[in-house]
Length: 100
Image (cartoon, rainbow, N blue to C red):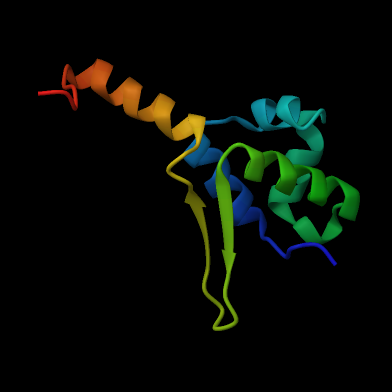
């Protein structure tokens, strides 16, 4: 059995990574169409496609949360390259550096 995720979690994961549907498709070696369909109704997607998308997002630093109490969520892990890129981008825009 694969992890149960929702289309909303996939969209949230993309947002954290600043990825478009096209980019996620490219990273997962899929077209944009199955990504869009999965985000609308993940239950109608092929299990192998869902597994591939989950694997791709997790390798990019995403952690999916599905607790027994019904809480769902998405985390961007601190050691991910996507998070490092966002921090660097924010420093560039604000002119701030973490170095004193």
